[in-house]
Structures are given as structure tokens and as C-alpha cells.
Image 1 (tube, one colour):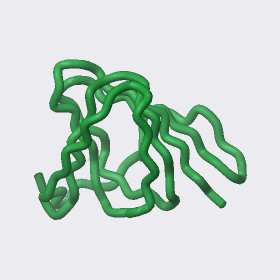
Image 2 (cartoon, one colour):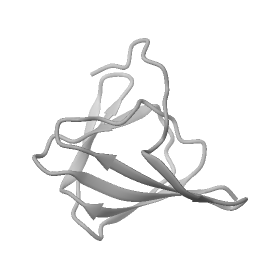
Image 3 (cartoon, one colour):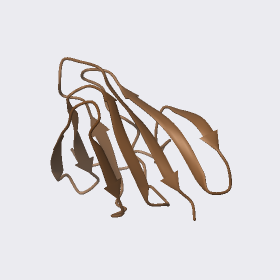
Image 4 (cartoon, one colour):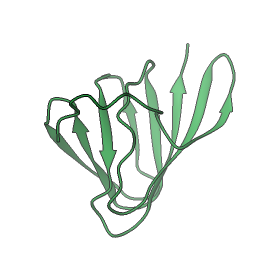
Length: 101
């Protein structure tokens, strides 16, 4: 679904730690829910803790399936406005580590 005029929000659910080099977030997306539309200002790594993966929805209306399982990690360096949607029947949780330097 395209973003239209929806404002950008938080990158994830909760900040766990931050210093001058990294910012660590928890992202929790319940079944049928989606994160805020957002844009990452830094490269980041995600590590899946719980769940089956998400669908990434970009603001131009395109989507990308991201199958995963606990322990799966990804390095992200392509920054586009997006949100993630949980189309599964189970809660999704990851730890997101923003690399500031």
C-alpha cells in the first residue's frame, strides 16, 4: 500500500541502548499489524528473535517479502521510506542495531 500523506514515525518499538556509536532498538509487530512508516538515517543490522518474517512495504506501493526465523540476521544499507507488516499468525520481534559511525 502506498504511504500517501501518512507522517514518518519511529524506526522501531523501543530504544534499549544508545551511545555515540550505536543505537539498539526492539521491534515488535503483532500479527496483522505494521510498524510506522519510517526512514533509517544510518546503516543497521537486524537479528530476528521471534516470528516468521515480515513484508516490507515501500512508500511507492511496492512490497518485498522477508522470510526469516529466529537467529536470522541482515545488514541493511539501502535507505528508503518503508514500513514492515506482519502477515503471519505469530508475533514478530527483532533487535535492530543502528551503526552511527
